[in-house]
Amino acid sequence: MEPIQDFAALMSRLRSQKVRKRVAVVCPNDAHTEYVILRSLQEGFADFLLVADTPHLINADYIHRQYPDRVKVYEASSPDKAAQEGVALVREGHADVLMKGIINTDNLLRAVLKKEEGLLPKGKVLSHITVAQVPLYNKLLFFSDAAVIPRPTLEHFDAMIRYDVEVCRRMGIDEPRVALIHCTEKVNEKFPHTLDYVTLKERAELGAYGRMFLDGPMDVKTACDSHSGEVKGISSPVVGHADMLIFPNIESGNTFYKSISLFGDANMAGMLMGTIAPVVVPSRADSGNSKFYSLALACVCSE
Image (cartoon, rainbow, N blue to C red; front, side):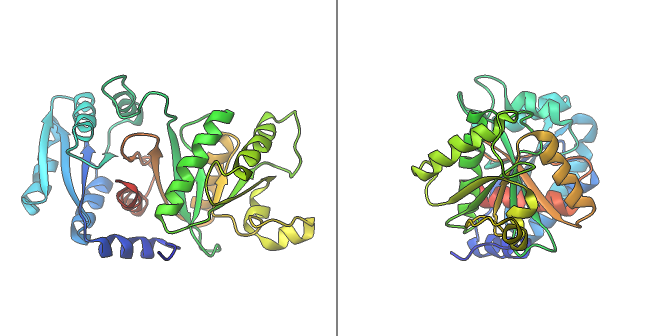
């Protein structure tokens, strides 16, 4: 399978599969979410189960009337009830993907993380992966975690790498190149995450993550720019060619996300990992395109 190197290729892959994924959308009553639903229906890769709270049922009914064979509508008495119903649809096997509409992320996550009734299996780590199409980079760039884990532990880093490597492989990248991000290339006990990086590299060398390359600590420029590595005298399969960046904390990951989106004109997609099915939780500030590509990514990665 050829690697998917941009979002146009992602859409081509979805169309070629000729399989419609079932997407449960919680509170689909904002303009961006409606755009995503209608565009996905036009592209032909998804059917929808729209869970709307009673005051906004009219929005869901409007979409249903346009695609009566492809859209089902469920009524809930409140946004919280809508979240519970959306999660239940996934748990019971009626939907392959869960997507957030205009509901507050915290409200949706309460339902996703609810013991015995949520979507996160016991012992699993919840993490977020972002995929960026940056105009000045020659392929898609994957990174974690910009949204969920404030201060990753070794266990968190391990889970993030496992999840993200699997997403890369579903996107046709057989041997992902993973950079462990820090402000320098030095391991220093003052920065405990760099000690974790040493352990992660040892695990990678022993085959814990399958066929892949993992190196670090290194900064983002070194990970994505070969010249930077040459100047610093660093030789590695990852340097200048990173597919994936693992950030040391949520501040650095989120700042990177916002910076390349605003100043780098990057198109973005993202979803939660660790759950029994992909969960799309776009930010309120994300564009309609970003939300659309997030759903497309989730559909490619769903079982």
